[in-house]
Image 1 (cartoon, rainbow, N blue to C red):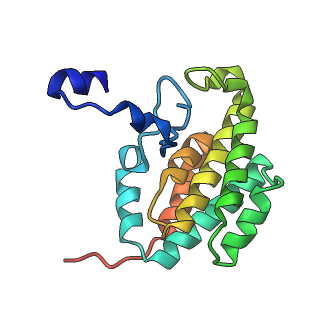
Image 2 (cartoon, one colour):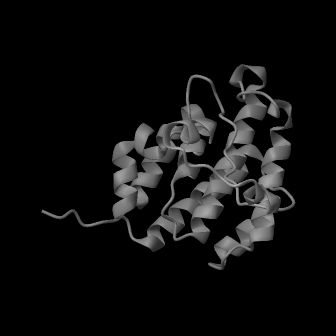
Length: 181
């Protein structure tokens, strides 16, 4: 705000700070060398295919991805499991339950709290499991919002690492769209 005030003269009145305000929570970067910039950055062709895929197929892709991550990283946890059950039933996931899923993800990454980023070399297994939980969290949120957001796939890409190419091929196979000629 100081830069805006210096440049434009615009400022907030002191009473503006008397009431609670909404904030944006930003995920902790998961690596210094690779930022979670978005699927469109890492997998532009797959991102484009997903955006042309019908909603039902996008939902099925996200649900299948969640199931793969739970099995691969043993993430059948107290709040993730009921949230996934609700998602599989096609129902919206309660905001409180999504918050509990976020708390479970944070708990898995406690060793990195307060650090600038979660360094992979410190604990390869824990790091990948933490990313997988974040992929699940973002996929669940996307399912609640029309299955248009693919941040979950970005996190899954890094969590699955050498297993990602086969997963990407399965995701690609589940995309169905008619190209416009």
